[in-house]
Length: 199
Image 1 (cartoon, rainbow, N blue to C red):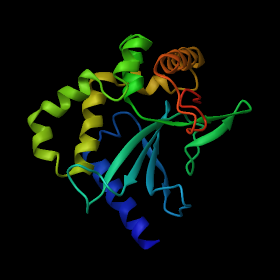
Image 2 (spheres, one colour):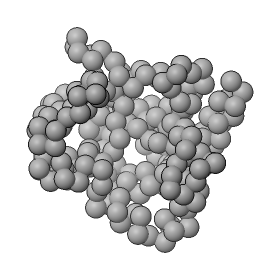
Image 3 (cartoon, rainbow, N blue to C red):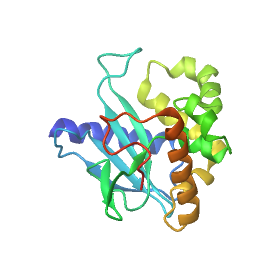
Image 4 (cartoon, one colour):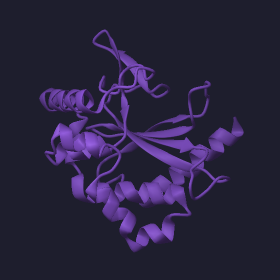
């Protein structure tokens, strides 16, 4: 337990050091330190638009196998602290989301294009090509946090607004975009709920 708390303290320190939380009025709302088998330590921040979950990732190949990294997810304000899925409008759905599909949507990309580039994005490739990437790739926590600074520079506040519960029409367009994209890409039957079931 003390190790989980220590990890969360370190993550929170790095986030406060590098992310411009005050500019976007994000405030820490939770630390996930008491874990079940499916959880990882995390620090969660809330704003008027959305939530951000910075989550411990124990092993991060290809660069490190002994140190840890983090994954950063975005959620709507109803996303729970301790689980990645929830029941919304009577349907189980994913409530924490990685960023690349959302960036394709905000760029106006087609579902066909996104299906072929689901795990990459032009801006993320550009970030990897920078000198900063070369300097930080062996310090994966800082690298991941700075990647989101880079994303925010180009997409904030539009990225946050995508997850805003006050914009149900935009969210419904995104849900439809994901459905069409997974209709093309295909769904893995072992992933429950399907990845296009989002809330």
